[in-house]
Image 1 (cartoon, rainbow, N blue to C red):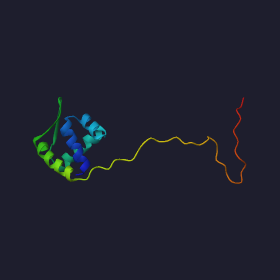
Image 2 (image 1 turned 90 degrees about the horizontal axis):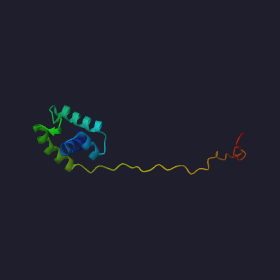
Image 3 (image 1 turned 135 degrees about the horizontal axis):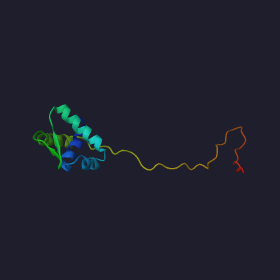
Image 4 (image 1 turned 135 degrees about the vertical axis):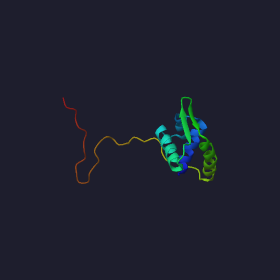
Length: 111
């Protein structure tokens, strides 16, 4: 049982919908559903019920929510992923100069 799975389960319980929980957790819906399914398989009991009005926690799910909140509270905060915009290269669009070779020149436009 991983902390991320517990966070995903709590998001589903709080939001009442897999899609909204995925948006809140910044992951895909498939990841949320897989995490909840893995928790259900590990605990060998149904934690959520899906119906036309959304997702609801079962009695076992409501009981497990307290345990999950306690475990997540004790766990260290998630480390943010490094990222940002990729920067374009600032080259001149020419081949690099190779030692001992003549300097490359711009190709002329053919007719």
